[in-house]
Length: 126
Image (cartoon, rainbow, N blue to C red; front, top):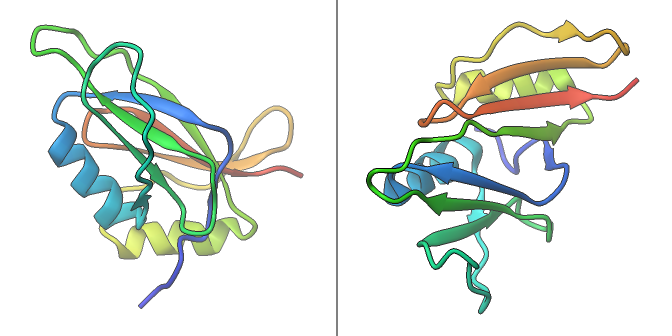
């Protein structure tokens, strides 16, 4: 129903995940991100995958934690030109998103979480 994701990845992010395959599938299915195949390697030596919004070079890298490592929750920020459209788009894709609110600086935003509980914020700057 909806085409290209109605948001952009604000900056390159690295997100720790417990299960790389499950996280990759979730981000590709729910956020319609595509894999970007590069020849780079992660400094930690852990398995990873680079994802991006089609047509963009900004990366969201998912990095698999070692089995006994604790997850450190990250906070990813995405930008949308039309916040209401992005909210509806994600809701239609089965994601439980929070209400659209404003922060103390006047930025309109909403949040949701990925499979590992990482916070993802979608905002429009005033």
